[in-house]
Amino acid sequence: MLNHYSPFSVAERFLQLEALTPGRIDLGLGRATTGPLIDAALRRDRGTRSADDYASQVREILAYYHRAFEPDHPLSAIDITDRIETVPEVWILGSSGSSANLAGKLGLGYAFAGFINPGSAFAALDAHRKGFRPTAFGAAHRSTMLALNIVAADDEDTAHRLTWPARLLWRRLSSGQAAITPTLAEAEAELAPSSKGQSSTFDGITIPSQLAGTVGTLRSQLVHLAGATGATEIMVQDMLVDSELRSRSRELVAEAISGITTLPDQTDLTTPPY
Image (cartoon, rainbow, N blue to C red; front, side, top):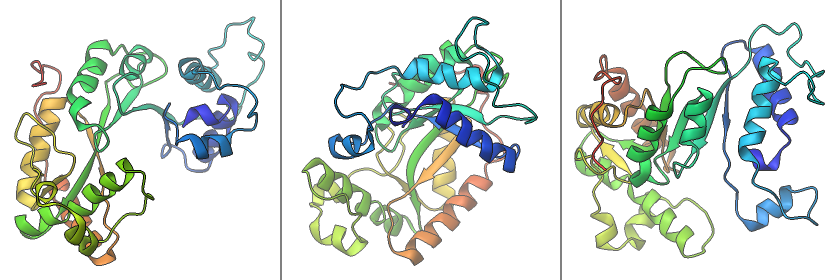
């Protein structure tokens, strides 16, 4: 959440991690806030209104990493990369699609929070694909990450039931309740039948808020999702507080993903179905 930090501080901290573990650090830059209370707690200067200068903050971080300041820029004399051979891979994070064009223009990877706003995933990732131009700041080829709420079980019915805690959490958040992730038992007791029955399967057109299945059905859904969105990576999120259910679910999700050996050609995608 870049709006809470100076670009120099972020660049320096993540470069230190990169120096300790070369080639293993990604830096994801998001523009979101955390809500009024935490935003106020994080701010040092609470007497002025914060400005939305996200794009310039991103560019400043890239300038530190790639010595890309103009010669007359007041910060051009700073060199934090001296004797450090690699820099973190920078990604732009988004949940509305508003940052997709910025990521494409700068040649950066783009990660979309499909678990927050699945309905905008097609448009956001398509905008990044259309606007992507390779630059010195990123890889030569486009990278897009689709983050989804995914759960799995040994049978379809159990897998679908595992989506209920996430659904109840979102209902609680929307009604102003505390953001405490419920147990499966709590979700089973509190959720209305209509919420329990909402789809947890990608039908080729609509991405559900929570995706569920067995190893086989999940693998099929993820292959189709990657083809439809052009995503080159899938990030997995879940809302399971029961350690045994969570461990088993992640074991099966990992098995489903590891079994995907080929994906559709993502350079010649047709217009996505949104």
